[in-house]
Length: 450
Image 1: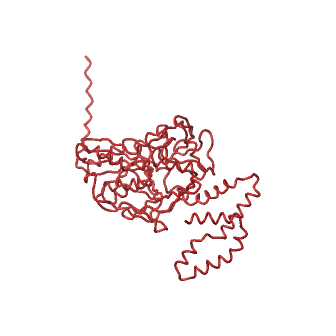
Image 2: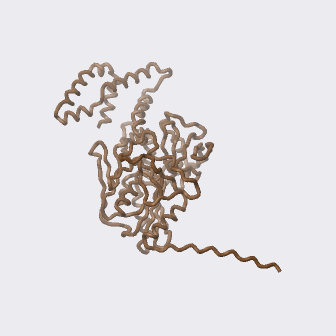
Image 3: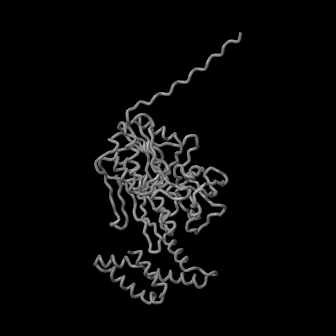
């Protein structure tokens, strides 16, 4: 309703700025009187009104650009730029989505679209930071990593002011796109060739690690993720209940909150899952578990890293705070904010940050993330915090605790070694002895030469 009111007032101001200017003193006097009143309804009503001085200033700038800019400017494009500007400085996750981008956003939550399969963050300079490539996607196969920065696409340098710098990555399946990448620790930018594909993201995969010990990987949270999780977990337990489960959430960029909530409910008998709090109490929510643990109380280990974000952090936090699971890996991304998609009458949408996530213990994930019980580090490389996390994104929402943002920033944990470490912890929790490695055979004595 406020967004619609703002649009109406702006539209009216564009056609009659003088009327706005003449009414401003009377309007200001009315606001002062209402704010001085003891009537809370009057105070709330006046506080919700659009500030007319700022609207008048905006109209002045808008008209100056239309009349005096060196080249003609399309009114619609100018207005779209203004609306994007309203959102740009709020936080890294609020954005104006044109219809094509809003449709793509919806496609990704459904789990099927044409592109390269990568979660991106557009930076103020126009370049694109890789949050995480989706499993078995063209981006993953080409070698893109969490923390990489895409600075050019098909030879065109990404610049400030582009509404959607990632648009060229989408296109017909089977076509190629060339990206230029900057990577931490690599001196020069380098090119990667990606072949676009129809990304039908299977967000859940599973297998048996050892008899009685299951592995379940969730790469993102889509509309069907919770149902797929149940099917895969039931398949692992088809012959006998599991003695333990390893839940892998590494480099999971998040997605639909409801998927994380439903999966947490499947693994908890009781307790809180997550709560959200914003400025408007009508948007506050709390989710609690209902009786029934699909894993029947078997030990659970959750594997996370610096690429685990948003809904993945919600799930890890819910299982950890209810003492249902041990969290192993590296400190998570720290995206603890809720985005609401507000459709507009022209087919475009606004993605607006409206609340923060809180774990059952009241911990805010924002800019801090989830700290694992057991910390792992990448094997065979120098220890180096991830170059991308919520705490380093320009304009991010501040953390709510005294903890220093960015302290002990996490690392990305690729490969199978973290799985081996998490499996060892799972076996310890399940009371399964780990087989000792055989001692190396002594070197054979050289035979005497006759």
